[in-house]
Length: 99
Image 1: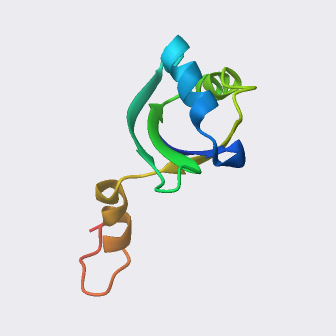
Image 2: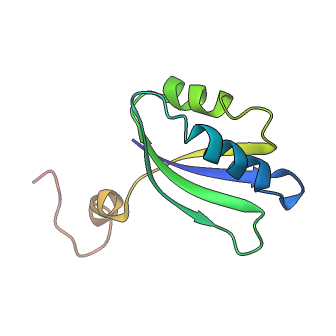
């Protein structure tokens, strides 16, 4: 499953997180895969896409970042390609998916 992780940096200061990243790496437990990340223009937040089938492993990863001055919001997401068939089943003019 995919998760959008929104990291919010205390006082808009991402330096403590990047210092820990440089020293220890991403510290990903087995079963947690980093996909990509984007940093907000003002450096207040980072958006990471992670893949993981066991939420407890993702929680373990988050716990490893305690004390680094960052909070996490975890949002389960689907790709647009995964979502499209759900809507095609209910949109007017599409065929009945059960037929």
